[in-house]
Length: 626
Image (cartoon, rainbow, N blue to C red; front, side):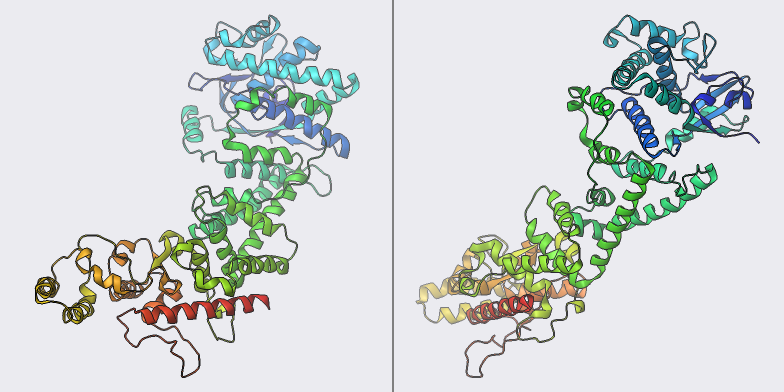
């Protein structure tokens, strides 16, 4: 049975390695391939990453003395006469050829990518030119790659210069014995898996399938590949794993990852924790706590510093992946961070489904990030909670935050629309924690779960119950017609005959359901004592706010009741305000009570509502101080 895992040296061996096993004489890059394009501009580009990955694996292997293997990705090939046509993997094979070409040219190391004087990787587009010899000459002459017009030569020369810089640093910083040991590790311990396609399969078709169905290269996708590839190599008994074992473990870890990714892709979950319905998995990965990075060797630090100028221009889109890559060097590292991700997922999930945590976290999220254009504060806030050792500490933090935002009793009378934020935060608390409504005794948090997703989506905000004079046309009073007519007729009795005639015209328009301007009934607004009073405030949805603001109490009440009947979300306190179900328990001879009418919001209702809010706030404070 033929092998399919080979060391770098065996990948290129004619006499006993991969080429010998499959009876071929080299690797062939067909014309449909896109050419060589691995970059070397920054420390995060493909060529420097490959070099550092291999060197860091060598350092770990030297320290542990476990003779561990380091796996590169697959190469996919198809036998074509006496050659292997490379379908996927030309970038890796070409980079390895460039690497050993540099070692041979400048460090007198045997070039295992050549058979005598012939390179074992050949490009169809360079039939009359040995591309690797050309690159060697350019490198020796210190040619500027910017003068080259061909893509392959441009990137190959840049890659070769990067490789030479890397080996120059190793050769200077390490003695010759250690330099030789690294080269030996590179040849023998770095492995490639060979995926051989059936000879009857079209290479172009396989290449198209490989490239057309790729998952978008998001941070989360790249981190998944990094973690699963490295973690599955971990052998607890320090013995090398067989390929089948590696694949089985990747499947298991992949299922766990997919479960986590599916949960954080839920829009409700992503919005709740991160303030954004998109990129839930990526935002969760930002919460992972990294271990302090061990001091790197002089080789690694020197090599990284050589990119200080170019790396400033690096696209920060993959900054998160680069951070993970910085911390995940060994299989043990990958296994550790997979467990960290799993632990973070389970803890956040437990908070999400516990109503006490859910309501307290949601409240702090909304208040902490109120009107922030950049919602990065969400992940930072959650990260602070995750840093706490116990759930008791988390609860204490959340309750302290709520108490800090609730106004003191001597400050409540000055609340209202002019102190928008403080009033909004108070009414939000009353809606999120209705268990603590005035004079109730049980206060069981688990009986209620606030719909933060609907609250955010429908843009609920602080609004007037009895409207301010909106000074607009087409003022909607259809549902409040009887009340408006009653107010007009009552005032009409006190007027002169001439003014009464004007009112007769207005009464006729209203009676006939004709559109009127709000200015025509501004005397009704003047009759209301204090529009901005705390008692005249409630949370209303932005999606229906235009309709709500252009109407009196009964109009708003009917719109909200219709929303409830349709199954839409309406905060509990708002429901209670517009159905006058707010319970006030005071002495029987007190004048503090709501009017009996369910269709009118009066000055007396404002006073009663303000009293209710103040008593509720006192009960909230008492509850959360327990």
